[in-house]
Image (cartoon, rainbow, N blue to C red; front, side):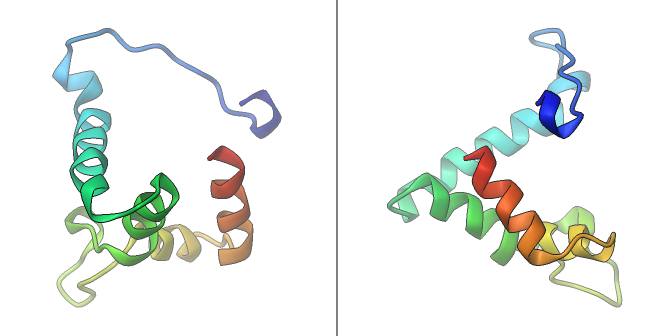
Length: 87
């Protein structure tokens, strides 16, 4: 994490206001696992194929996290390399 300038901040346990989004992500990813053979496939589907309601705007339905990330100026190859390094 230090190599990527990411600061690890511990959150309190059993505190939905703090952990809600991450807990939801964990639940969603675990629920997708039976449909794929590897975790890499799950993560790829979640980030590159599955649209996310929180990212969709009326005139732009179907936005994926990778699309939102790329719109901030990060290329697909750079983001894909970074994701593979995390896995």
